[in-house]
Length: 426
Image (cartoon, rainbow, N blue to C red; front, side):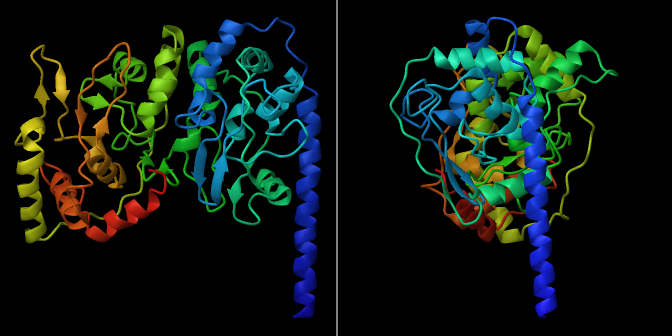
């Protein structure tokens, strides 16, 4: 037993030493990148801040723009975003090199490793020129006095030793390298999607330690604390867009709305804070890249059909609360101009996804698409959390997943309660 413990201690010590050796090597690589030789463009910096949706995480609800303080739930505890304004409590005194170190290596000005909630596996791909432009724009913003709140992570996840180990397993710094087999439009789309737009931060499948297969992993997974699932972008039955036209996808990214498709939940925030600001060239590039993703079916359990009483209860609830807008057969409804007012539920991927999480969350919280210049007055759906208990909500969700030609399987009350418990952030 003693020999085993000694061996285990030596193994742990060796792993720690290897982690720090790797970090030292990564630091050397990071610091060798020269600053941009061009004068940073503030207008470009503002555009890049929109691409990266910096305000989405670095602005607390009801707080001042970019002053941080937003609580970000993770499986390991809560992280609080930092102040990006040029105040002493934020980025005042940060040089372009300091900022580059944070984006490229996930290292603070004092050398401290940042937690992986900062999507370093994505931001490391950003070029030095883009990093310098973003830094210059942030330094030009109004300073806000907003000291950073300490993270509330369970031990040892917030320790520098644990972060060093995580990086040894999951992170290699490096600017995006174009794929020579693809054209410039595709590569621009890959650079944006994998890099500053950090799409895999939500759409990657995570292991027990929060690691993934890299910035081109879009297999989907549950968003910790939110109760929503970021569906797979590889599976056309989930959220893959391989069969969409370029124009449909460009319109959806820009407006949050396209024929039969509306951005909901966290994705509505992404559209409102990021993709609606993309110029036509970048919209086309991102569309090209996303439509080219390899198709891969998501894992699906064999569907279990609801019993007769649940089916009858679900059908009754649908007639009472849903049919007036969505149609007796889930066909949806158009307004006087012929545009879709209330989307069809028949054939809806949100209804038939492998996980019922998004459907349950939508019924509970209501459905509200983003109001964008191209779609300024989206129709909404009221929340039903105060009207439907777990049994009724499960019956209604089961009806939707098993009607209109669907065979997605039932939802039971235990699943509804489990999904509610997972949504710690309301």
